[in-house]
Amino acid sequence: MTKFLEEIRTEEELLAIIIRSEYDQPDISFFTPDDNILQVGYMSYSENKKIQPHIHNQYKREIQGTQEVIFIKEGRLKATFYNQDKEFVSDIELSSGDCVVLISGGHGFELLEPTKMIEVKNGPYAHDEDKIRF
Image (cartoon, rainbow, N blue to C red):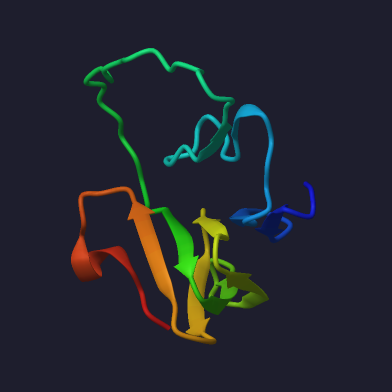
């Protein structure tokens, strides 16, 4: 990992991937493993690059669980990470332009200033069947 790309983990599992606003690599690179239920990558191309038009095939996937990607559009927050037993693992500050991929375990956020975020997660949305609050 680099100082602009961090993993939050226990000995047994990857909890989250932090992608700092300063992260920059040429071409395309994926942060999540191929078998992960969300595929999160970064693309950086020069001008006049063309990405061939394409359609994604209808492909049945069977998944267990929910993963999220939170992009901090503006502001600052403290993200706290927990293992599957709801035990504290670590916390980290995120600010404008940072992104966190929430893979496993638990998480919570404390807003340190007015903050705007974009959240992406796999669906369909399962309301309260999807989470345990603690």
